Amino acid sequence: TLKGRAKIQYIWDYYKFPLTILGILLYITAYILYGHISAKNSVLYVALVNVNAGEILTEGLSRDFLNYMNLDSSKNKIELYSGLYLTDDELNENHQYTYASRMKILAVIDGELLDVVLMNQEAFDAFSQNGYLYDLEDFLPQADSGLYNAVKPDLAANIVILEDNQEELMFDASASYHAVTEEHYYGIDLSRTTLIDSAGFHEPVYFGIIANTPRTDNAVDYLKYLYNYESSGSDIQ
Image (cartoon, rainbow, N blue to C red; front, side, top):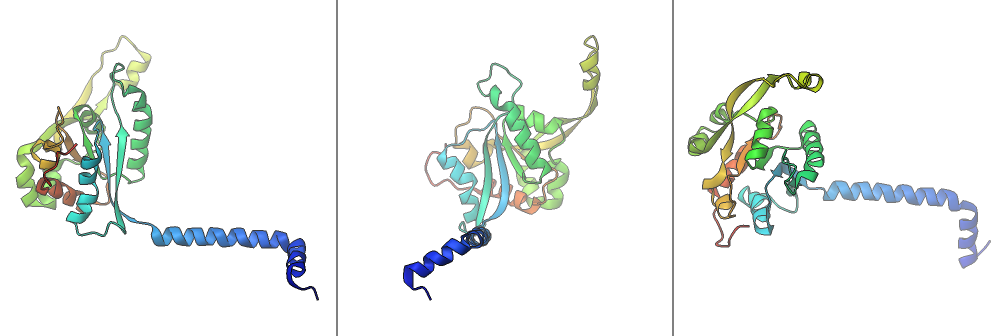
Protein backbone atom coordinates (compact mmCIF):
# COMPACT_ATOMS: atom_id res chain seq x y z
CA THR A 1 0.00 0.00 0.00
CA LEU A 2 3.03 2.29 0.20
CA LYS A 3 3.64 4.80 -2.56
CA GLY A 4 6.67 6.41 -4.20
CA ARG A 5 9.89 6.77 -2.21
CA ALA A 6 8.37 5.08 0.83
CA LYS A 7 7.74 1.93 -1.22
CA ILE A 8 11.31 1.98 -2.60
CA GLN A 9 12.70 2.44 0.90
CA TYR A 10 10.57 -0.47 2.16
CA ILE A 11 11.84 -2.79 -0.61
CA TRP A 12 15.43 -1.75 0.07
CA ASP A 13 15.14 -2.21 3.85
CA TYR A 14 13.79 -5.76 3.54
CA TYR A 15 15.52 -6.99 0.38
CA LYS A 16 18.82 -5.11 0.24
CA PHE A 17 20.95 -8.25 0.73
CA PRO A 18 19.47 -10.30 -2.15
CA LEU A 19 19.35 -7.14 -4.30
CA THR A 20 23.02 -6.49 -3.62
CA ILE A 21 23.94 -10.08 -4.53
CA LEU A 22 21.84 -9.81 -7.70
CA GLY A 23 23.56 -6.54 -8.63
CA ILE A 24 27.02 -8.09 -8.16
CA LEU A 25 26.09 -11.12 -10.28
CA LEU A 26 24.72 -8.88 -13.03
CA TYR A 27 27.91 -6.78 -12.97
CA ILE A 28 30.15 -9.85 -13.19
CA THR A 29 28.06 -11.30 -16.02
CA ALA A 30 28.16 -8.03 -17.96
CA TYR A 31 31.93 -7.70 -17.39
CA ILE A 32 32.60 -11.23 -18.67
CA LEU A 33 30.36 -10.71 -21.72
CA TYR A 34 32.02 -7.40 -22.53
CA GLY A 35 35.48 -8.93 -22.20
CA HIS A 36 34.49 -11.81 -24.45
CA ILE A 37 33.00 -9.54 -27.10
CA SER A 38 35.81 -6.97 -27.06
CA ALA A 39 38.75 -9.40 -26.70
CA LYS A 40 41.25 -9.33 -29.56
CA ASN A 41 42.65 -12.43 -31.20
CA SER A 42 46.38 -12.80 -30.50
CA VAL A 43 47.89 -13.52 -33.91
CA LEU A 44 51.47 -13.85 -32.69
CA TYR A 45 53.52 -13.59 -29.50
CA VAL A 46 56.89 -11.88 -30.00
CA ALA A 47 59.60 -11.26 -27.40
CA LEU A 48 62.37 -8.67 -27.57
CA VAL A 49 65.25 -9.97 -25.45
CA ASN A 50 68.22 -7.64 -24.91
CA VAL A 51 66.74 -5.53 -27.71
CA ASN A 52 65.34 -2.06 -27.06
CA ALA A 53 62.70 -0.77 -29.47
CA GLY A 54 61.46 2.79 -29.79
CA GLU A 55 57.94 3.77 -30.81
CA ILE A 56 58.50 3.54 -34.56
CA LEU A 57 60.22 0.16 -34.42
CA THR A 58 57.54 -1.15 -32.06
CA GLU A 59 54.91 -0.08 -34.57
CA GLY A 60 56.82 -1.85 -37.33
CA LEU A 61 57.04 -5.03 -35.29
CA SER A 62 53.36 -5.08 -34.37
CA ARG A 63 50.62 -3.11 -36.12
CA ASP A 64 52.42 -2.94 -39.48
CA PHE A 65 52.49 -6.75 -39.54
CA LEU A 66 48.71 -6.82 -39.08
CA ASN A 67 48.38 -4.43 -42.03
CA TYR A 68 50.69 -6.68 -44.06
CA MET A 69 48.42 -9.63 -43.26
CA ASN A 70 45.27 -7.56 -43.97
CA LEU A 71 44.04 -8.16 -40.43
CA ASP A 72 41.74 -5.74 -38.62
CA SER A 73 43.69 -4.21 -35.72
CA SER A 74 40.45 -3.71 -33.79
CA LYS A 75 39.98 -7.48 -33.70
CA ASN A 76 43.55 -8.78 -33.81
CA LYS A 77 46.80 -7.97 -32.04
CA ILE A 78 50.47 -8.83 -31.78
CA GLU A 79 51.55 -9.54 -28.21
CA LEU A 80 54.95 -7.87 -27.93
CA TYR A 81 56.96 -8.68 -24.80
CA SER A 82 59.58 -5.99 -24.21
CA GLY A 83 61.93 -5.07 -21.38
CA LEU A 84 63.36 -8.61 -21.17
CA TYR A 85 67.07 -9.00 -20.41
CA LEU A 86 69.34 -12.03 -20.11
CA THR A 87 72.96 -11.50 -19.12
CA ASP A 88 75.60 -13.13 -16.96
CA ASP A 89 77.60 -9.91 -16.77
CA GLU A 90 77.09 -8.51 -13.26
CA LEU A 91 78.40 -5.15 -14.44
CA ASN A 92 75.67 -4.88 -17.07
CA GLU A 93 73.12 -2.23 -16.05
CA ASN A 94 70.27 -4.64 -16.88
CA HIS A 95 71.66 -7.56 -14.85
CA GLN A 96 69.14 -6.90 -12.07
CA TYR A 97 66.27 -7.74 -14.45
CA THR A 98 67.72 -11.10 -15.54
CA TYR A 99 66.00 -13.31 -12.94
CA ALA A 100 62.54 -11.81 -13.50
CA SER A 101 63.02 -11.97 -17.28
CA ARG A 102 64.09 -15.60 -17.12
CA MET A 103 61.02 -16.53 -15.07
CA LYS A 104 58.69 -14.75 -17.49
CA ILE A 105 60.34 -16.33 -20.53
CA LEU A 106 60.06 -19.81 -19.02
CA ALA A 107 56.40 -19.20 -18.13
CA VAL A 108 55.33 -18.00 -21.57
CA ILE A 109 57.24 -20.79 -23.33
CA ASP A 110 55.66 -23.39 -21.04
CA GLY A 111 52.22 -21.87 -21.68
CA GLU A 112 52.81 -21.79 -25.48
CA LEU A 113 52.48 -18.02 -25.38
CA LEU A 114 55.72 -17.25 -27.20
CA ASP A 115 56.27 -17.82 -30.91
CA VAL A 116 59.09 -15.59 -32.11
CA VAL A 117 62.05 -14.01 -30.35
CA LEU A 118 64.27 -11.12 -31.52
CA MET A 119 67.52 -11.07 -29.55
CA ASN A 120 71.16 -10.11 -29.39
CA GLN A 121 74.05 -12.58 -29.42
CA GLU A 122 74.03 -13.23 -25.66
CA ALA A 123 70.31 -14.01 -25.62
CA PHE A 124 70.69 -16.08 -28.81
CA ASP A 125 73.32 -18.18 -27.04
CA ALA A 126 71.01 -18.73 -24.05
CA PHE A 127 67.95 -19.71 -26.12
CA SER A 128 69.99 -22.01 -28.35
CA GLN A 129 71.87 -23.79 -25.58
CA ASN A 130 68.65 -24.56 -23.75
CA GLY A 131 67.00 -26.06 -26.83
CA TYR A 132 64.19 -23.50 -27.07
CA LEU A 133 64.52 -22.80 -30.80
CA TYR A 134 63.69 -24.58 -34.06
CA ASP A 135 66.58 -25.67 -36.25
CA LEU A 136 65.67 -23.38 -39.15
CA GLU A 137 67.78 -25.29 -41.66
CA ASP A 138 65.44 -28.25 -41.12
CA PHE A 139 62.22 -26.35 -40.47
CA LEU A 140 62.12 -23.60 -43.13
CA PRO A 141 62.64 -25.72 -46.29
CA GLN A 142 59.53 -27.69 -45.35
CA ALA A 143 57.52 -24.65 -44.27
CA ASP A 144 58.39 -22.34 -47.19
CA SER A 145 61.21 -23.30 -49.55
CA GLY A 146 61.18 -19.92 -51.31
CA LEU A 147 61.59 -18.06 -48.02
CA TYR A 148 64.33 -20.46 -46.97
CA ASN A 149 66.33 -19.69 -50.12
CA ALA A 150 65.90 -15.95 -49.49
CA VAL A 151 67.14 -16.05 -45.89
CA LYS A 152 69.74 -18.81 -46.30
CA PRO A 153 72.71 -16.39 -46.46
CA ASP A 154 71.63 -14.99 -43.07
CA LEU A 155 71.24 -18.27 -41.17
CA ALA A 156 73.19 -18.19 -37.93
CA ALA A 157 74.59 -21.31 -36.27
CA ASN A 158 74.70 -21.93 -32.53
CA ILE A 159 75.00 -24.86 -30.17
CA VAL A 160 72.56 -26.79 -28.04
CA ILE A 161 73.81 -28.48 -24.87
CA LEU A 162 72.69 -32.11 -24.94
CA GLU A 163 74.18 -32.94 -21.54
CA ASP A 164 76.71 -31.48 -19.14
CA ASN A 165 78.06 -31.93 -15.61
CA GLN A 166 76.63 -28.72 -14.17
CA GLU A 167 75.07 -30.55 -11.21
CA GLU A 168 78.38 -32.24 -10.42
CA LEU A 169 80.08 -28.85 -10.22
CA MET A 170 77.65 -27.79 -7.50
CA PHE A 171 79.07 -30.46 -5.19
CA ASP A 172 82.66 -30.66 -6.40
CA ALA A 173 84.40 -27.35 -7.04
CA SER A 174 87.55 -29.16 -8.18
CA ALA A 175 85.77 -30.76 -11.16
CA SER A 176 86.08 -29.15 -14.59
CA TYR A 177 83.05 -28.34 -16.71
CA HIS A 178 82.38 -30.43 -19.78
CA ALA A 179 79.37 -30.75 -22.06
CA VAL A 180 78.11 -32.67 -25.07
CA THR A 181 76.84 -30.22 -27.70
CA GLU A 182 75.54 -30.07 -31.27
CA GLU A 183 75.57 -27.16 -33.69
CA HIS A 184 72.46 -26.18 -35.64
CA TYR A 185 71.10 -23.13 -37.42
CA TYR A 186 68.79 -21.74 -34.76
CA GLY A 187 68.69 -18.11 -35.84
CA ILE A 188 68.65 -15.61 -38.68
CA ASP A 189 70.70 -12.42 -38.66
CA LEU A 190 68.22 -9.66 -39.54
CA SER A 191 70.86 -7.07 -40.42
CA ARG A 192 69.84 -7.10 -44.11
CA THR A 193 66.19 -6.35 -43.38
CA THR A 194 65.09 -2.75 -43.79
CA LEU A 195 63.26 -2.55 -40.49
CA ILE A 196 66.18 -3.71 -38.36
CA ASP A 197 68.91 -2.09 -40.46
CA SER A 198 67.21 1.31 -40.18
CA ALA A 199 66.97 0.98 -36.40
CA GLY A 200 70.70 1.60 -36.07
CA PHE A 201 71.60 -1.31 -33.79
CA HIS A 202 75.32 -1.64 -33.09
CA GLU A 203 75.20 -5.45 -33.01
CA PRO A 204 73.24 -8.10 -34.94
CA VAL A 205 69.64 -8.81 -34.03
CA TYR A 206 68.71 -12.46 -34.45
CA PHE A 207 65.34 -13.99 -35.29
CA GLY A 208 64.33 -17.32 -33.79
CA ILE A 209 61.16 -19.45 -33.72
CA ILE A 210 60.26 -21.11 -30.43
CA ALA A 211 60.25 -24.89 -30.82
CA ASN A 212 56.87 -25.53 -29.16
CA THR A 213 54.88 -22.76 -30.85
CA PRO A 214 51.42 -23.80 -32.07
CA ARG A 215 51.45 -20.84 -34.53
CA THR A 216 54.24 -21.84 -36.91
CA ASP A 217 52.36 -20.52 -39.97
CA ASN A 218 52.10 -17.05 -38.46
CA ALA A 219 55.74 -17.17 -37.36
CA VAL A 220 56.79 -17.94 -40.94
CA ASP A 221 54.58 -15.11 -42.22
CA TYR A 222 56.25 -12.78 -39.70
CA LEU A 223 59.71 -13.66 -41.03
CA LYS A 224 58.46 -13.15 -44.57
CA TYR A 225 57.07 -9.76 -43.52
CA LEU A 226 60.41 -8.69 -42.01
CA TYR A 227 62.17 -9.44 -45.29
CA ASN A 228 59.48 -7.68 -47.34
CA TYR A 229 59.14 -4.63 -45.07
CA GLU A 230 59.23 -1.31 -46.91
CA SER A 231 60.30 1.70 -44.89
CA SER A 232 57.99 4.70 -44.90
CA GLY A 233 61.04 6.94 -45.12
CA SER A 234 61.31 7.64 -41.40
CA ASP A 235 64.31 6.54 -39.36
CA ILE A 236 63.35 3.36 -37.51
CA GLN A 237 64.26 3.49 -33.82
